[in-house]
Amino acid sequence: MADAGYASGFKLKMPYTPFVSFEKRFVWLADQYRRYLNIDPQVQKYDMTEIYKMRDSGDFHLYNYDTLAFLGDPDEQMAYFSTGNSANCSAYSNPKLDALWQQESQEMDPARRQQLSREIERILLTDLPAVPMAFNSMATGRWPHVKGSSVKSRHTPPALMNGHG
Image 1 (cartoon, rainbow, N blue to C red):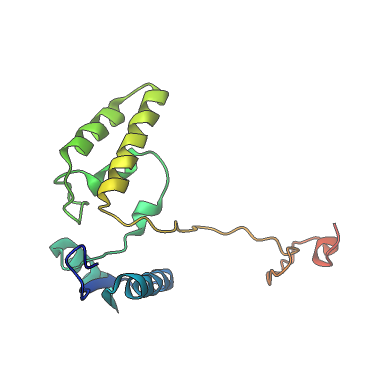
Image 2 (cartoon, rainbow, N blue to C red):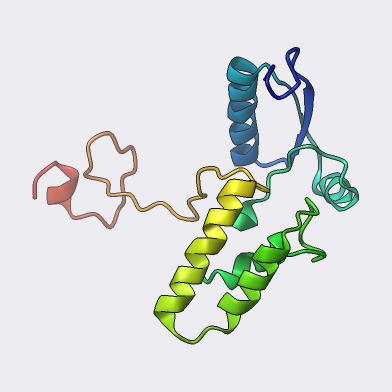
């Protein structure tokens, strides 16, 4: 941090929404910043209305946005990182990335489209307008016969519930 000009660290405003998964994620991340980077995170829960006001006005240093966790077509992420887009709440701008995304979006050859997508990823991971974190699990599959599982289903065959099979 000293090499970056912050030998004494700094405060970091980290608002989060009232969802348990967000709170756990931000408390963990704040601990990492405190422990390893000498950053003083100000982690505070806000209701959704206040969070959206803060997001839209840019009144935050770090904002958790789970929409970025969805994996699908690369075009689904374009709005969050393209210059001037209203969904780009960090006001990130990279003209080279904008041009690549337009090219990728119109590319018909799957191999070339994948190549362009990988270049987009490299730029985003170099510029780092968003902090990559663990992806959300929208659903968790559980088997009641797996060791340590506390889930017991009335639809589970008795042989499996008894550890057989």
